[in-house]
Amino acid sequence: MADKVMIHVESLRKDYGSGRYAVDGISFDVRAGEVLGFLGPNGAGKTTTMKILTSFLAPTSGRAEVAGHDVYDDSLSVRSRIGYLPEDTPLYRDMTVLEYLEFVCDVRDVPKESRRGRLRKVVEQCGIGDRLGALIGELSKGFRQRVGLAQAIVHEPEVLILDEPTSGLDPNQIAEIRGVIKQIGQEKTVIFSTHILGEVQATCSRVIIISDGKLVADGTPDDLARKSAGAASILLEIGGSRGNDTDPLSLLRHIDGIEDIKAIDTSGWSLSDRPRATKFRIVAKPGIDPRGDIARVIATASGMDLLQMTPETASLEDVFRKLTTTQGA
Amino acid sequence: MRNTMAIAKREFQSYVNSPIPYILVTFYIVITGYLFFSQLFLGRQAEMRGFFENMPLFFCFLVPLVTMRLVAEERREGTLELLLTMPITDWQVVGGKFLAGLGMMALLLLLTLAFPITVAALGPLDKGTAVASYLGALLLSGAFVAIGVMASAFTRSQIVAALIAFFISFGLFLLGAVVGVLPHWLAPVAAAMSVSSHFMNIARGVIDTRDLVYYASIIFVCLLIAQTTLDSRRWR
Image 1: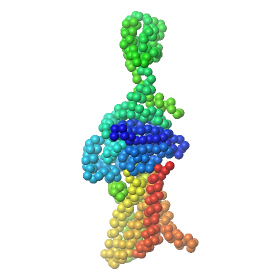
Image 2 (image 1 turned 30 degrees about the vertical axis):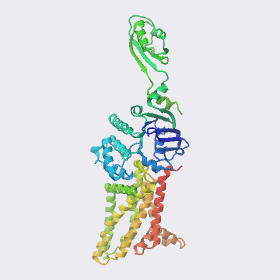
Image 3 (image 1 turned 180 degrees about the horizontal axis):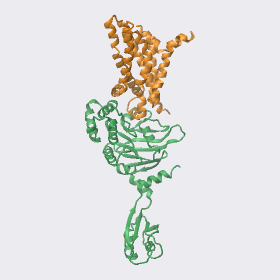
Image 4 (image 1 turned 120 degrees about the horizontal axis):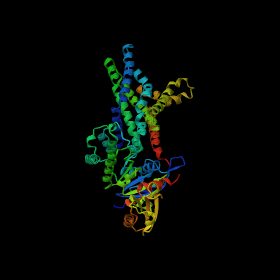
């Protein structure tokens, strides 16, 4: 069970008829119990891929399987095993929350005897207990989103597909929805799309980045950050003076374990008439942490003050920007 | 079947919660009531013929307004996507919506039972003809509702859906009205296609298989087109 492939996507292509592929040859697998973040700029093909996975649309070529069933040939089996929340949470505004959830149970064939228990569970999980009698059209966006989540999980699907579940919510609501997703992700396979990076770092065990319909990265959030960063760098800022006139740059060059030093700010501070750098980006040799040496040299030899020394690892944001802007265009 | 009924139930609930059906029903009852009672008091005739003769024309206007929202609104709101990713077939969706529309019309016809009851109170009512006429009215409603469901599946705009349904229904009605002026080789074709001639056949109390087949085919063909329209998103 632990490593059963729940979603299998193979050279998936979708052409809406414009001759341009909205999804262009994507392949990936999602295993049971994974929470997969589906990342990409707007228009990259996230929504299209999800619409194919839910068998709302047919792929132009390639194929996709959910829980071992083909989304095109065996669409009813796929649809009975997924829970889906489309973008913008389309719900029937003229129904109350409870009426709506009961309708979903009817259509999804939730057996009568387990219905009460399931309803009680999702109502509690999504925190909509005191809104059951309210019309969906009168709910706030945050509560609508929770009802959307509730309808997606009430039949206990094996796979949960959520399209931008947190878009348009305020930070508190986002945190709540994330909490629910995380909780669900402990038992189910979840795939959700977003263009907010913090979201995947907070919630996902794995990230896929697509850009212009193509898959450009696949790995854990940490993996991706590490991969694109190359060697780790250190941001150093110094200042002040105790009368020593040595150029700190030349001092730093003597330290073992430093691969490269770049001055990134030469304006502003100078002891004599020569302008002198106060901010450096230092790239260490692989496997060596030169921070101790740097601190000592600055403090003793240069006579200047160490203001800042920060190890820099590329954030997912950098990875994202790098991968999605150099592509295509 | 359970899924179909779930859809039908939801749609019907939605009708009950919306003001439009109440307005339409009131409108219809008031106007036909006026015609019926003016005939009764001024013409001193207690009979149902006028009521049923006018029905196809009235329904051309009325039914599209009842059916226009069935699919179009879901398409506009995006709820159609969610509905079609649930484990139900497109046929069940179309069938459920058809049944809800038909149920609405059946409710309307139920309210008009006040007229035959009035007639029966004032004089002899030909019960057989009345029953046949109401069966015809139900079939007529079925045909127009199916046309409405089909038109509603074509577009996301309710107005456009209502107009398409109206033009098709009114076209089928007109065929009956122009039979007299058509060349003699075309007239039988027009009569065979016309909703009103088949309706009047049944309303006379003669239930002929041809008339039943006529309505059944309209319903089937329109729902098939509606189902195909929904399915077309998955063509490749």
